[in-house]
Length: 278
Ligand SMILES: [Mg+2]
Image 1: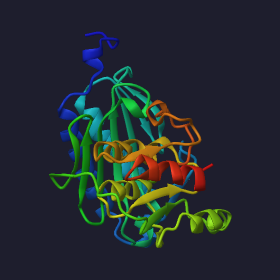
Image 2 (image 1 turned 30 degrees about the vertical axis):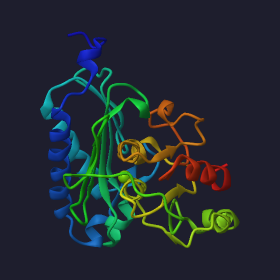
Image 3 (image 1 turned 45 degrees about the vertical axis):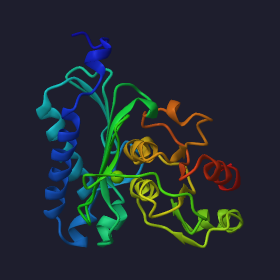
Image 4 (image 1 turned 90 degrees about the vertical axis):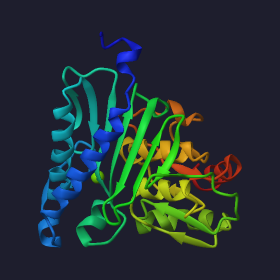
């Protein structure tokens, strides 16, 4: 089959199994570095722009070993290595954040995960499978386009619309929080939570654990590619307001930069984008 063949380019059911193998491999890799001193050894700057810790590299190596073992052509977009053509590349895009929440992982805090999205093209709307494994709790979040979002095998129901009790914020550098303080107060949220993982904050909205989330600084595609499908398949709403009106056209490329916003209803999403992310 030619790489231009739409059937060849459409990921099939094996991709979720691949994501699970890769997630397990990352969990095993992380166990090799149990202490903070072992985990925080820097290895230079990754292609995504952040300083890569030894655990980021080890986790990424574990994912690539699984991807390479599959022996299929694909374009991998990964936080540390950047864009990599396996088997000649092609329309299947696999977007990897080996550890989202590296700082938490380094410091022994929960809320760190591996995030893998498999897409039949180069945009968020092309994502067919989104997989997020919480490396602290072992919770497994996944979604398949058109087949719903799941947590540990149970399909997520759309969260009931509720007042904004918990608003999760990401990229919570004190300067970002200070700049957004008035806007955050104006949302009427009862409490803020800064979990430290964009992917898991998005999944929290999908499950109704948080009522909404907003990143206070531009995020990258690798942070959100998998979990944005979990949000959408749970019938919640997501936006990349620095890219444009339609979240589905947001590129998966590593140079994409946009804040990400999610809420349980389109109206709540619009309010947050207007109030906090414009
Ligand atoms: Mg990372």
